[in-house]
Length: 358
Image (cartoon, rainbow, N blue to C red; front, side):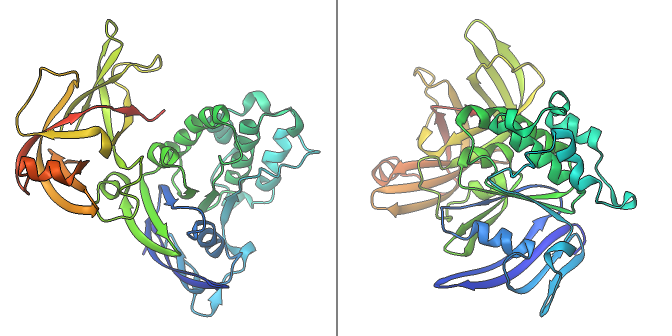
């Protein structure tokens, strides 16, 4: 189908079997998410043609694999960014960037060096050598070099794993800019919920070589049936606009499709900005009536959409809707029964924490 990435692939590696059937968007960042050993990197290698696999693969309407016919790696118009940058140490940043660009026929060039310099903030680095760059700077150059091959598909295999925390924070805004600027599909392997929450538009959750959930990020994270729903950082992501900055109390008011929330003010935030926030299931409690006389300031009316009782002994999950926006609350099963909660009931969500994804 034109405009999508379709992969129905199976491969056997010793005792491990990868068996996936995916239809992914033709633009934006799709996060391939799961614990170590679940098959994320194997999936990327199969898509790249580095690992033999059975099945079929098409990218933006172009067949790359069908039955026994399979394009070799060098005939697949993709770029692959690894954990290690592997820059050419004897070439300047400018020459590293141009290495792949010069090998692309002019008629096939879709991305120009000036665009990459701007997206990734590389102009000040062009004459420097790789040895003089920080880890985050090297990874930005590696991403830029990959983009300048004008790929139809960009694969990124945990590109931030080798970086320290400060370098990760430095590079994430550039990746956000790429997400908003590029018109090609990006498959981004990660086991970091923070990276996924901040960058992804779409998510594929994997476990033991199989896809256990896939779909738009916000919708999929709000499901109660995926295997990561009880992890400490399980929750939902929502996007909204800053409509007020309260300098007295160092807070911001965020409007989203379903209500408003207060969050802690950060220096870079200003009225009119669109941001993403994360609300963890463990940070939502429920009440049958509004209780403004408490320390929790974010109180939202909601309707119970679904209740999954005893997902683990003594713990239940409640999916709620504030307008069209879905939330997850993790409750003790005892609380569920004491409040006599049921599907379709109107309640108040008491949200203890709202985390800006920055």
